[in-house]
Picture 1 (spheres, rainbow, N blue to C red):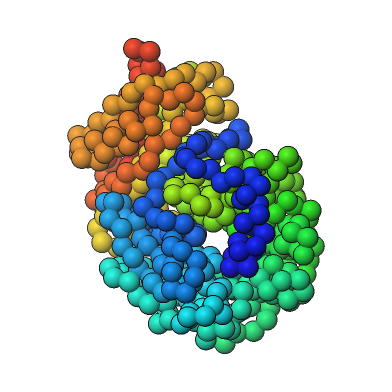
Picture 2: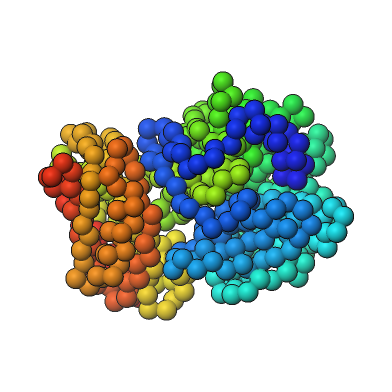
Length: 453
Protein backbone atom coordinates (compact mmCIF):
# COMPACT_ATOMS: atom_id res chain seq x y z
CA UNK A 1 0.00 0.00 0.00
CA UNK A 2 2.77 2.46 0.80
CA UNK A 3 4.44 2.20 -2.59
CA UNK A 4 1.13 2.53 -4.39
CA UNK A 5 -0.80 4.90 -2.14
CA UNK A 6 2.12 7.18 -1.29
CA UNK A 7 3.11 7.37 -4.93
CA UNK A 8 -0.28 8.63 -6.10
CA UNK A 9 -3.05 9.73 -3.75
CA UNK A 10 -0.76 10.68 -0.86
CA UNK A 11 1.26 12.99 -3.10
CA UNK A 12 -1.92 14.88 -3.95
CA UNK A 13 -2.93 15.03 -0.30
CA UNK A 14 0.43 16.47 0.70
CA UNK A 15 0.20 19.13 -1.98
CA UNK A 16 -3.31 20.03 -0.83
CA UNK A 17 -2.58 20.12 2.89
CA UNK A 18 1.12 20.95 2.98
CA UNK A 19 3.44 18.79 5.09
CA UNK A 20 4.94 20.65 8.03
CA UNK A 21 8.29 22.19 7.25
CA UNK A 22 9.38 22.75 10.84
CA UNK A 23 8.76 21.01 14.15
CA UNK A 24 5.68 23.04 15.00
CA UNK A 25 3.68 21.58 17.85
CA UNK A 26 0.72 19.46 16.95
CA UNK A 27 -2.59 20.01 18.73
CA UNK A 28 -3.31 17.29 21.30
CA UNK A 29 -6.73 16.64 22.81
CA UNK A 30 -7.26 16.92 26.57
CA UNK A 31 -5.71 13.90 28.26
CA UNK A 32 -2.54 13.94 26.13
CA UNK A 33 0.65 16.02 26.16
CA UNK A 34 2.24 16.64 22.77
CA UNK A 35 5.98 16.61 22.22
CA UNK A 36 8.62 15.57 19.70
CA UNK A 37 11.81 13.53 19.37
CA UNK A 38 14.33 14.65 16.73
CA UNK A 39 15.49 12.01 14.26
CA UNK A 40 18.84 11.75 12.42
CA UNK A 41 17.09 10.43 9.31
CA UNK A 42 15.78 11.41 5.91
CA UNK A 43 12.24 10.41 4.97
CA UNK A 44 11.28 8.33 8.03
CA UNK A 45 9.16 5.34 6.98
CA UNK A 46 7.97 3.71 10.22
CA UNK A 47 8.91 3.56 13.90
CA UNK A 48 9.15 0.92 16.62
CA UNK A 49 10.49 0.85 20.18
CA UNK A 50 13.03 -1.87 20.96
CA UNK A 51 13.81 -1.74 24.67
CA UNK A 52 15.64 1.53 25.29
CA UNK A 53 16.24 2.16 21.58
CA UNK A 54 14.07 3.53 18.80
CA UNK A 55 14.09 1.82 15.42
CA UNK A 56 13.17 3.80 12.31
CA UNK A 57 12.88 3.02 8.62
CA UNK A 58 14.36 5.72 6.43
CA UNK A 59 15.69 6.62 3.01
CA UNK A 60 14.47 7.29 -0.51
CA UNK A 61 11.77 5.19 -2.14
CA UNK A 62 13.30 3.05 -4.88
CA UNK A 63 15.47 -0.02 -5.47
CA UNK A 64 17.69 -0.51 -2.42
CA UNK A 65 17.16 3.10 -1.32
CA UNK A 66 15.75 2.45 2.14
CA UNK A 67 17.18 0.99 5.32
CA UNK A 68 16.36 0.52 8.99
CA UNK A 69 18.38 2.27 11.67
CA UNK A 70 18.53 1.89 15.43
CA UNK A 71 18.89 5.04 17.54
CA UNK A 72 20.46 3.96 20.83
CA UNK A 73 20.07 5.75 24.19
CA UNK A 74 23.68 6.94 24.06
CA UNK A 75 22.88 8.81 20.85
CA UNK A 76 24.57 6.28 18.60
CA UNK A 77 22.95 5.49 15.26
CA UNK A 78 23.44 2.05 13.71
CA UNK A 79 22.10 0.87 10.36
CA UNK A 80 20.83 -2.64 11.04
CA UNK A 81 19.05 -3.55 7.76
CA UNK A 82 19.89 -2.40 4.23
CA UNK A 83 18.66 -2.86 0.65
CA UNK A 84 14.95 -2.18 1.09
CA UNK A 85 12.78 -0.43 -1.49
CA UNK A 86 9.54 0.69 0.18
CA UNK A 87 9.16 -0.17 3.85
CA UNK A 88 5.62 -1.03 4.87
CA UNK A 89 5.51 -1.59 8.62
CA UNK A 90 8.12 -2.23 11.32
CA UNK A 91 7.09 -4.07 14.51
CA UNK A 92 9.14 -5.38 17.41
CA UNK A 93 8.11 -8.85 18.59
CA UNK A 94 9.26 -8.78 22.23
CA UNK A 95 8.32 -12.40 22.91
CA UNK A 96 10.53 -13.60 20.06
CA UNK A 97 13.09 -10.78 20.35
CA UNK A 98 12.89 -10.08 16.63
CA UNK A 99 12.13 -7.14 14.38
CA UNK A 100 9.44 -7.85 11.77
CA UNK A 101 9.05 -5.63 8.73
CA UNK A 102 7.64 -5.60 5.21
CA UNK A 103 8.67 -4.24 1.81
CA UNK A 104 6.12 -3.68 -0.94
CA UNK A 105 8.12 -2.57 -3.98
CA UNK A 106 9.94 -5.67 -5.12
CA UNK A 107 8.49 -5.17 -8.60
CA UNK A 108 10.64 -2.10 -9.24
CA UNK A 109 13.33 -2.51 -11.92
CA UNK A 110 16.64 -3.06 -10.16
CA UNK A 111 15.14 -4.30 -6.87
CA UNK A 112 16.83 -7.47 -5.62
CA UNK A 113 14.25 -8.31 -2.94
CA UNK A 114 10.79 -7.20 -1.86
CA UNK A 115 7.05 -7.84 -1.77
CA UNK A 116 7.46 -10.00 1.30
CA UNK A 117 8.03 -9.97 5.07
CA UNK A 118 11.31 -10.18 6.96
CA UNK A 119 12.55 -10.99 10.48
CA UNK A 120 15.73 -9.73 12.16
CA UNK A 121 16.67 -11.66 15.30
CA UNK A 122 18.03 -9.90 18.41
CA UNK A 123 17.95 -6.41 16.85
CA UNK A 124 19.60 -4.78 19.89
CA UNK A 125 22.82 -6.71 19.24
CA UNK A 126 23.18 -5.96 15.52
CA UNK A 127 26.10 -3.58 14.92
CA UNK A 128 26.38 -3.59 11.11
CA UNK A 129 23.80 -3.61 8.31
CA UNK A 130 22.37 -6.94 7.17
CA UNK A 131 20.97 -7.11 3.64
CA UNK A 132 17.20 -7.58 3.76
CA UNK A 133 17.30 -10.43 1.26
CA UNK A 134 18.98 -12.63 3.88
CA UNK A 135 16.10 -12.14 6.35
CA UNK A 136 13.03 -13.22 4.34
CA UNK A 137 10.28 -15.24 5.99
CA UNK A 138 8.68 -15.88 2.58
CA UNK A 139 10.10 -15.75 -0.98
CA UNK A 140 10.22 -12.46 -2.83
CA UNK A 141 6.89 -11.61 -4.42
CA UNK A 142 4.88 -13.79 -2.02
CA UNK A 143 2.90 -10.76 -0.76
CA UNK A 144 2.83 -8.19 -3.61
CA UNK A 145 1.59 -5.25 -1.49
CA UNK A 146 2.98 -6.29 1.90
CA UNK A 147 2.04 -3.69 4.51
CA UNK A 148 0.85 -4.47 8.03
CA UNK A 149 2.55 -7.13 10.16
CA UNK A 150 1.47 -8.65 13.48
CA UNK A 151 3.30 -11.30 15.56
CA UNK A 152 1.13 -13.85 17.36
CA UNK A 153 1.80 -15.91 20.46
CA UNK A 154 3.62 -19.07 19.49
CA UNK A 155 5.57 -17.50 16.65
CA UNK A 156 3.04 -17.21 13.81
CA UNK A 157 2.94 -13.92 11.89
CA UNK A 158 0.07 -12.13 10.15
CA UNK A 159 0.77 -9.88 7.17
CA UNK A 160 -1.64 -7.51 5.45
CA UNK A 161 -1.56 -7.45 1.65
CA UNK A 162 -2.86 -4.05 0.44
CA UNK A 163 -3.47 -5.25 -3.11
CA UNK A 164 -6.44 -2.96 -3.82
CA UNK A 165 -10.21 -3.28 -4.33
CA UNK A 166 -11.26 -6.85 -3.59
CA UNK A 167 -7.69 -8.13 -3.67
CA UNK A 168 -6.63 -7.16 -0.17
CA UNK A 169 -6.09 -9.95 2.33
CA UNK A 170 -4.42 -11.03 5.55
CA UNK A 171 -1.89 -13.84 5.25
CA UNK A 172 -0.95 -16.16 8.11
CA UNK A 173 2.60 -17.54 8.20
CA UNK A 174 2.98 -20.67 10.32
CA UNK A 175 6.05 -22.85 10.24
CA UNK A 176 7.29 -21.07 7.14
CA UNK A 177 4.07 -21.80 5.23
CA UNK A 178 1.71 -19.00 4.14
CA UNK A 179 -2.06 -19.30 3.86
CA UNK A 180 -4.88 -16.79 3.39
CA UNK A 181 -6.66 -16.00 6.67
CA UNK A 182 -8.92 -13.14 5.48
CA UNK A 183 -9.70 -12.22 1.86
CA UNK A 184 -11.94 -9.76 0.02
CA UNK A 185 -10.36 -6.64 1.54
CA UNK A 186 -9.10 -3.60 -0.34
CA UNK A 187 -6.04 -1.62 0.79
CA UNK A 188 -5.36 -3.53 4.02
CA UNK A 189 -3.79 -0.89 6.22
CA UNK A 190 -3.31 -2.36 9.68
CA UNK A 191 -3.72 -5.55 11.70
CA UNK A 192 -3.92 -5.60 15.51
CA UNK A 193 -5.10 -7.82 18.32
CA UNK A 194 -7.84 -6.60 20.64
CA UNK A 195 -6.70 -5.87 24.18
CA UNK A 196 -8.06 -9.19 25.44
CA UNK A 197 -6.40 -10.93 22.49
CA UNK A 198 -9.51 -12.70 21.23
CA UNK A 199 -10.19 -10.69 18.08
CA UNK A 200 -8.34 -9.33 15.09
CA UNK A 201 -8.85 -5.66 14.26
CA UNK A 202 -8.15 -5.07 10.59
CA UNK A 203 -7.84 -1.63 9.04
CA UNK A 204 -8.98 -1.19 5.45
CA UNK A 205 -9.23 1.60 2.87
CA UNK A 206 -11.73 1.10 0.06
CA UNK A 207 -11.57 2.26 -3.56
CA UNK A 208 -12.94 5.68 -2.52
CA UNK A 209 -10.29 5.97 0.24
CA UNK A 210 -12.84 5.69 3.02
CA UNK A 211 -11.32 3.95 6.04
CA UNK A 212 -12.74 1.30 8.36
CA UNK A 213 -11.76 -1.08 11.13
CA UNK A 214 -13.22 -4.58 10.91
CA UNK A 215 -13.42 -7.25 13.60
CA UNK A 216 -12.55 -10.87 12.86
CA UNK A 217 -12.07 -13.99 14.93
CA UNK A 218 -8.57 -15.41 15.18
CA UNK A 219 -9.74 -18.07 12.72
CA UNK A 220 -10.56 -15.36 10.15
CA UNK A 221 -14.36 -15.28 10.51
CA UNK A 222 -15.94 -11.83 10.09
CA UNK A 223 -17.70 -10.54 13.22
CA UNK A 224 -18.80 -6.94 12.67
CA UNK A 225 -17.19 -3.61 11.85
CA UNK A 226 -15.77 -1.62 14.74
CA UNK A 227 -15.88 1.66 12.81
CA UNK A 228 -16.69 2.64 9.20
CA UNK A 229 -16.74 5.88 7.19
CA UNK A 230 -13.40 7.05 8.56
CA UNK A 231 -11.50 9.78 6.74
CA UNK A 232 -8.54 7.47 6.30
CA UNK A 233 -6.67 4.48 7.71
CA UNK A 234 -2.91 4.01 7.53
CA UNK A 235 -1.26 2.55 10.63
CA UNK A 236 -2.78 1.41 13.91
CA UNK A 237 -2.00 0.13 17.40
CA UNK A 238 -4.08 -0.83 20.44
CA UNK A 239 -3.38 1.09 23.65
CA UNK A 240 -3.54 -0.07 27.27
CA UNK A 241 -7.23 0.89 27.50
CA UNK A 242 -8.23 -1.15 24.45
CA UNK A 243 -8.60 1.81 22.07
CA UNK A 244 -7.45 1.45 18.48
CA UNK A 245 -5.22 4.43 17.69
CA UNK A 246 -5.31 5.17 13.97
CA UNK A 247 -3.32 7.43 11.65
CA UNK A 248 -4.00 8.54 8.10
CA UNK A 249 -7.21 10.47 8.64
CA UNK A 250 -7.99 14.15 8.19
CA UNK A 251 -9.89 16.90 9.97
CA UNK A 252 -13.36 17.73 8.65
CA UNK A 253 -12.07 20.79 6.80
CA UNK A 254 -9.18 18.76 5.36
CA UNK A 255 -6.70 21.27 6.77
CA UNK A 256 -4.52 18.70 8.52
CA UNK A 257 -4.07 15.01 9.19
CA UNK A 258 -5.08 13.42 12.51
CA UNK A 259 -4.69 10.58 14.97
CA UNK A 260 -7.97 9.18 16.26
CA UNK A 261 -8.83 6.76 19.05
CA UNK A 262 -11.58 4.22 18.44
CA UNK A 263 -13.00 2.87 21.69
CA UNK A 264 -14.07 -0.78 22.06
CA UNK A 265 -17.70 0.36 21.59
CA UNK A 266 -16.83 2.03 18.27
CA UNK A 267 -16.80 5.65 19.48
CA UNK A 268 -14.29 7.71 17.48
CA UNK A 269 -12.43 10.61 19.12
CA UNK A 270 -9.75 12.79 17.56
CA UNK A 271 -6.74 12.88 19.89
CA UNK A 272 -4.33 14.92 17.78
CA UNK A 273 -4.28 17.03 14.63
CA UNK A 274 -1.86 19.30 12.79
CA UNK A 275 0.04 16.64 10.84
CA UNK A 276 0.76 16.94 7.15
CA UNK A 277 0.01 13.22 6.86
CA UNK A 278 0.13 11.02 9.98
CA UNK A 279 1.70 7.72 8.97
CA UNK A 280 3.79 5.34 11.11
CA UNK A 281 2.57 4.69 14.66
CA UNK A 282 3.97 2.88 17.69
CA UNK A 283 3.07 2.77 21.39
CA UNK A 284 5.82 2.32 23.98
CA UNK A 285 4.59 -0.25 26.49
CA UNK A 286 6.07 0.92 29.83
CA UNK A 287 5.37 4.65 29.33
CA UNK A 288 2.30 4.26 27.09
CA UNK A 289 3.69 7.13 25.03
CA UNK A 290 2.34 7.24 21.48
CA UNK A 291 4.91 7.86 18.74
CA UNK A 292 3.68 9.17 15.38
CA UNK A 293 5.53 9.89 12.16
CA UNK A 294 4.44 12.80 9.99
CA UNK A 295 5.19 12.12 6.35
CA UNK A 296 8.26 13.99 5.16
CA UNK A 297 9.45 15.32 8.54
CA UNK A 298 12.61 14.52 10.52
CA UNK A 299 11.21 13.97 13.97
CA UNK A 300 8.76 11.78 15.86
CA UNK A 301 5.69 13.46 17.30
CA UNK A 302 4.76 12.11 20.73
CA UNK A 303 1.49 11.96 22.61
CA UNK A 304 1.94 11.13 26.30
CA UNK A 305 -1.26 10.13 28.13
CA UNK A 306 -1.81 12.20 31.27
CA UNK A 307 -3.36 9.19 32.98
CA UNK A 308 -0.04 7.33 32.56
CA UNK A 309 2.03 10.05 34.27
CA UNK A 310 3.39 9.48 37.77
CA UNK A 311 2.61 12.26 40.23
CA UNK A 312 5.70 12.45 42.42
CA UNK A 313 3.92 14.06 45.35
CA UNK A 314 0.56 15.24 46.66
CA UNK A 315 -1.47 18.40 46.97
CA UNK A 316 -2.45 21.50 45.06
CA UNK A 317 0.93 21.85 43.31
CA UNK A 318 1.05 18.35 41.89
CA UNK A 319 0.24 19.13 38.25
CA UNK A 320 3.28 21.38 37.73
CA UNK A 321 5.69 18.45 37.32
CA UNK A 322 4.86 14.80 36.68
CA UNK A 323 7.10 11.93 35.60
CA UNK A 324 6.80 9.48 32.70
CA UNK A 325 8.68 6.52 31.29
CA UNK A 326 7.45 3.64 33.44
CA UNK A 327 4.37 2.21 35.07
CA UNK A 328 3.87 3.26 38.71
CA UNK A 329 2.86 0.80 41.40
CA UNK A 330 -0.68 1.49 42.56
CA UNK A 331 -2.55 1.55 45.83
CA UNK A 332 -5.43 -0.81 46.62
CA UNK A 333 -7.76 1.90 45.30
CA UNK A 334 -5.82 2.16 42.03
CA UNK A 335 -4.06 5.45 42.76
CA UNK A 336 -0.51 5.73 41.34
CA UNK A 337 2.37 5.83 43.82
CA UNK A 338 5.68 7.58 43.25
CA UNK A 339 7.45 4.24 42.81
CA UNK A 340 8.33 2.09 39.80
CA UNK A 341 9.23 -1.54 40.45
CA UNK A 342 10.62 -4.07 38.00
CA UNK A 343 12.02 -7.59 38.02
CA UNK A 344 15.33 -8.05 36.24
CA UNK A 345 14.70 -9.21 32.67
CA UNK A 346 10.96 -8.47 32.60
CA UNK A 347 10.45 -6.97 29.11
CA UNK A 348 7.38 -5.03 30.27
CA UNK A 349 9.59 -2.77 32.41
CA UNK A 350 13.29 -3.71 32.04
CA UNK A 351 14.31 -2.11 28.77
CA UNK A 352 17.44 -4.20 28.24
CA UNK A 353 15.27 -7.33 28.32
CA UNK A 354 18.06 -9.41 29.86
CA UNK A 355 18.54 -11.08 33.23
CA UNK A 356 21.87 -9.39 33.91
CA UNK A 357 21.65 -7.89 37.39
CA UNK A 358 20.34 -4.52 36.17
CA UNK A 359 16.96 -3.04 35.27
CA UNK A 360 17.00 -0.28 32.67
CA UNK A 361 14.33 2.43 33.00
CA UNK A 362 13.40 5.45 30.90
CA UNK A 363 12.75 8.60 32.95
CA UNK A 364 11.37 11.90 31.68
CA UNK A 365 9.47 14.87 33.14
CA UNK A 366 6.30 16.66 32.03
CA UNK A 367 5.36 20.20 33.06
CA UNK A 368 2.27 22.39 33.45
CA UNK A 369 -0.16 19.49 33.11
CA UNK A 370 -3.94 19.75 33.10
CA UNK A 371 -4.51 16.67 35.24
CA UNK A 372 -8.04 15.73 36.35
CA UNK A 373 -6.45 13.64 39.12
CA UNK A 374 -5.26 16.92 40.68
CA UNK A 375 -8.40 19.10 40.48
CA UNK A 376 -7.05 21.67 42.96
CA UNK A 377 -3.96 22.31 40.87
CA UNK A 378 -3.91 25.12 38.28
CA UNK A 379 -1.00 24.71 35.82
CA UNK A 380 1.50 27.56 35.65
CA UNK A 381 4.58 28.15 33.54
CA UNK A 382 7.71 26.34 34.70
CA UNK A 383 11.02 28.09 34.04
CA UNK A 384 13.56 25.63 35.43
CA UNK A 385 13.91 22.29 37.18
CA UNK A 386 16.60 20.83 39.39
CA UNK A 387 17.09 17.07 39.65
CA UNK A 388 19.16 15.30 42.29
CA UNK A 389 20.01 11.77 43.41
CA UNK A 390 22.72 10.59 45.80
CA UNK A 391 22.98 7.14 44.22
CA UNK A 392 22.25 8.12 40.60
CA UNK A 393 24.01 11.49 40.15
CA UNK A 394 24.86 11.06 36.46
CA UNK A 395 21.30 10.07 35.60
CA UNK A 396 19.94 13.01 37.56
CA UNK A 397 22.15 15.43 35.63
CA UNK A 398 21.02 13.92 32.31
CA UNK A 399 17.33 14.12 33.30
CA UNK A 400 17.81 17.79 34.23
CA UNK A 401 19.48 18.53 30.88
CA UNK A 402 16.64 16.87 28.95
CA UNK A 403 14.09 18.89 30.94
CA UNK A 404 15.95 22.16 30.34
CA UNK A 405 15.61 21.59 26.59
CA UNK A 406 11.80 22.08 26.77
CA UNK A 407 11.72 24.85 29.39
CA UNK A 408 10.34 27.39 30.03
CA UNK A 409 6.91 25.84 29.52
CA UNK A 410 4.14 27.97 28.02
CA UNK A 411 1.73 25.04 28.29
CA UNK A 412 1.83 21.27 28.76
CA UNK A 413 5.24 19.90 27.71
CA UNK A 414 7.29 16.74 28.18
CA UNK A 415 11.06 16.32 28.06
CA UNK A 416 12.94 13.60 26.27
CA UNK A 417 13.78 10.47 28.22
CA UNK A 418 16.96 9.45 30.00
CA UNK A 419 18.13 5.86 30.42
CA UNK A 420 18.54 5.01 34.12
CA UNK A 421 20.12 1.65 35.05
CA UNK A 422 19.33 0.32 38.54
CA UNK A 423 21.07 -2.63 40.20
CA UNK A 424 18.85 -5.65 40.85
CA UNK A 425 19.21 -5.70 44.63
CA UNK A 426 15.62 -4.83 45.60
CA UNK A 427 16.68 -1.48 47.07
CA UNK A 428 15.04 1.74 46.01
CA UNK A 429 16.97 4.56 44.32
CA UNK A 430 15.33 7.93 44.68
CA UNK A 431 15.42 10.86 42.30
CA UNK A 432 14.27 14.27 43.52
CA UNK A 433 12.68 16.95 41.33
CA UNK A 434 12.15 20.65 42.10
CA UNK A 435 10.24 22.75 39.57
CA UNK A 436 10.45 26.56 39.64
CA UNK A 437 8.37 29.25 37.98
CA UNK A 438 8.26 33.03 38.42
CA UNK A 439 10.97 32.81 41.08
CA UNK A 440 9.08 30.31 43.26
CA UNK A 441 9.30 26.59 43.79
CA UNK A 442 6.12 25.31 42.23
CA UNK A 443 6.40 21.56 42.78
CA UNK A 444 8.65 19.15 44.67
CA UNK A 445 8.51 15.48 43.70
CA UNK A 446 10.35 12.24 44.40
CA UNK A 447 10.51 9.10 42.25
CA UNK A 448 11.70 5.76 43.63
CA UNK A 449 13.10 3.13 41.24
CA UNK A 450 13.45 -0.46 42.42
CA UNK A 451 14.83 -3.49 40.58
CA UNK A 452 14.23 -6.93 42.01
CA UNK A 453 16.47 -9.91 41.15
